[in-house]
Image (cartoon, rainbow, N blue to C red; front, side, top):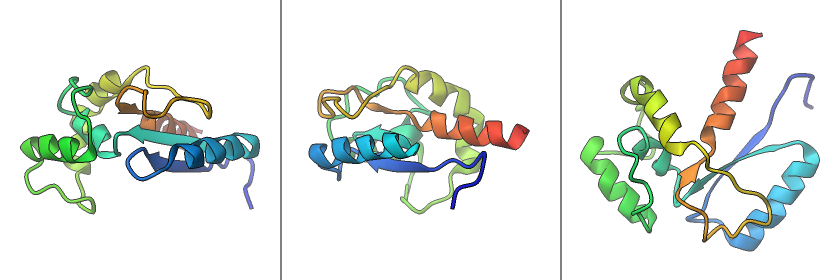
Length: 129
């Protein structure tokens, strides 16, 4: 049960989530007060944004992972990259700024990016209270 000040977020990637499922889930989440973090084409675009602003040239998750390997050799989805990425957080925030969407968005037509910093900002704001 949620208490005052609690937040809930669902995290989605475009690579494995059908458009209809995304729209339905986002509508339900909005009605329930649940935040949505969405990344296109995959969550690793967030990691890549720490190193480059040229995010639109990647068409598939495989493209993103191939480029990410240049910056994080041996990248693993379960790896811990906090210490590597933290000093570059402001660059990633700039490179992802302006990414937005809604339940009626054309998810395939959206630019690459993520709104993950909405979640980070909420957590940081909660810690300051």
